[in-house]
Image 1 (cartoon, rainbow, N blue to C red):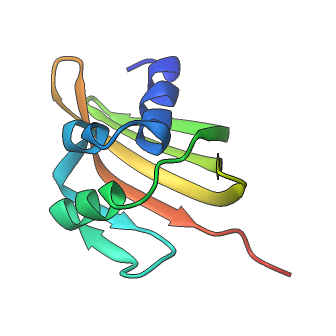
Image 2: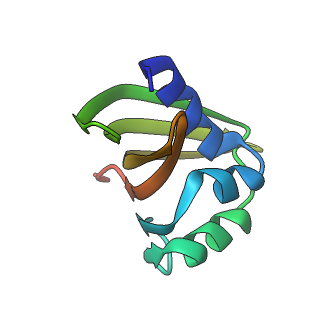
Length: 117
């Protein structure tokens, strides 16, 4: 997967419709978010995201891509998401695993809030 496709894939997870998660997140995905229940796995993570209002826009800054091995990609970035006057900023990581030719699934996602003064 090239860099532009990685950026599009990750943005779709923030602003895409609910079906994006069903298609793109592995049933075995591990997820850590800065809200209860904090740590989730698979279907629980997919359902939690489906119940969250979609972001209208997101900027992925400082995107770092590590192609660890064939069929495994780890990314890190700063997300700046917006919807209806609300803003959310977090430092994130995601890990993608290729399951078939040109088909990737998220197997890990983590969000860390920036420190507050």
